[in-house]
Image (tube, rainbow, N blue to C red):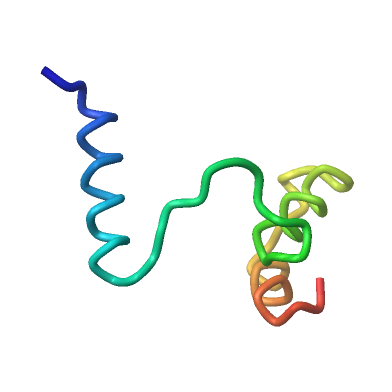
Length: 62
């Protein structure tokens, strides 16, 4: 029997596959929105992140 985390992973992978996406393995690319947010958080701390930082990361201006 699988545990709940494995079941969630399977469900997530299926949902992503149906929508034409895949679940990435490994760290986020540095030039991606997530990569930019992680770099900012490493430098300034997670508590410094705000909604504006997420919007800027998506726009590519962070």
